[in-house]
Image (cartoon, rainbow, N blue to C red; front, side, top):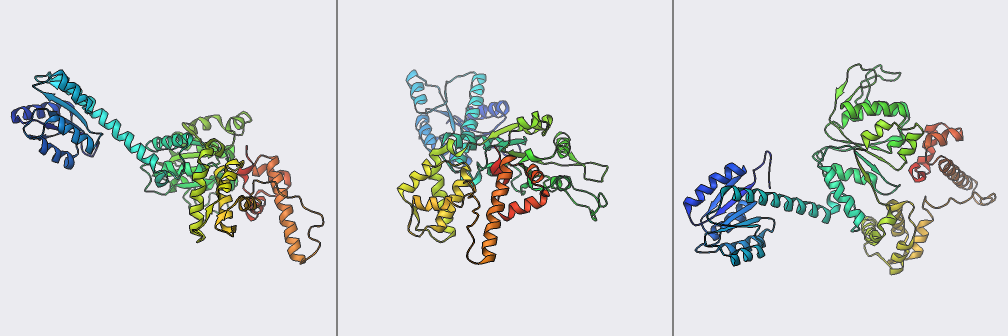
Length: 473
């Protein structure tokens, strides 16, 4: 069904009495505000149904070539979403029962009251709309990889994809919550890709990665001379995302001063670049994600309550991998297919024991940890079947496992420079890991407690591939 600027809803009327057709056309087109097409025989109606694709067919039963009951069956076989209303001047109870059994939406005996037939057409049009909308959603769920990026058949995943599909058609602000590795950015991209803004690139801001003063200028922009070093005007990310979607990833780490300005953007739909007195209107859909407990941060004064309620218009909570454990084999085979193609090892398969291992293992890092494990196993496996031993060997490199303690005399032999580098790497990894554990992933607090500048702390994290979100509750 097409509406708005597209075609109106369509009704095909079928009867071998032309005067009666003309009369019905005037009544239905005016009262139902729809396009009407006419057919004087069953076979002509079938041709028009195939080409014109009506939403509702109103058909007589007694016709010379193909009667209404046969037409009903053929239409239903071709497109079950088309609602068929049957009418006849020779009606019997048996005919009515048979028509309804064959899938007719309604049955009317001539002569009939115009208001009754109009009401029936209205309801039939609404039925077709609901059936086609449901079919559209089912097609999206059946092919999640095309638009959502989610893989699985478990109820939590199906419900999540359905919710994302519904949210995509709106402009509502969405707060995506979930543990580390559950796919919060994937969910944001799914909403964007299924929205009317999909023709524009989604802009993503990694909030914890930017110091406070840089984050503010990156988001809102600045004018020349706004601060030392501002030699030219710079458009902020909100202006860059005008007409598109902006994802504020890990919004729980945004400083309170920036939260205040962000609240104004959400309320007024306008930004004020640093150093500029006038505001600029922007059309940006804001999505936000976090794995932190924002309610606790509000209670401690670290997160504004009014900003929380502005962001939490439509909440989405992503399931953990333990909640969708039945999808692990499907996910595992998908990742194996992805990486075996990348590494040109398409003969690789899982052994039955390997799949059992994956099902039994605890995945603290959720889907991301599973994906990384299979990535390494695909690369390191020497045979044609991935075994539990390959997966356990892969897990030794996992950031979710406990770091090895630094041995006092582990590297007292061999090349000096190599031994020194290994010792420094192991020490720094263990030190940063413990610091982030103590602060539950708060980089600023970890750097402060360590006596290291935040930017230097982040450089070390990047060097040793440590991610702060892995330590947040």
